[in-house]
Length: 139
Image (cartoon, rainbow, N blue to C red; front, top):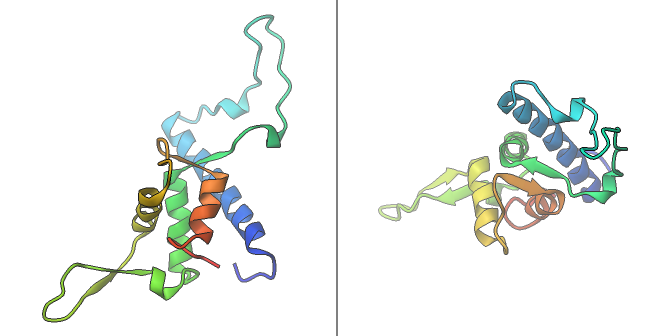
């Protein structure tokens, strides 16, 4: 994402990509019966309910989709090198390291998150905090 826009706009683009990937995973779990394809009908009188403004609800993405986005960022070297490695625990005869996976980075974020993440989803704010915070530190 070598573009000349503020980091928050880049995070917004990545979040939109993760939302798209989340719908892909949702469709895999729901046998391609997405509730977004059918109109919402009121249980009281059976009339169609108008869609809610986008800003009126919290947007979520699945952790699997976030993992895929972080894996691609890591693969394209958009994560700083000091955030890409972790110690293996072997200190003798020399200290050894391994490359962090996307799941490692997400787990690090989840470990320090207060309150902890609920279920297997992440909000837009949590996604932004993770990418711009010290766990991934994309830009």
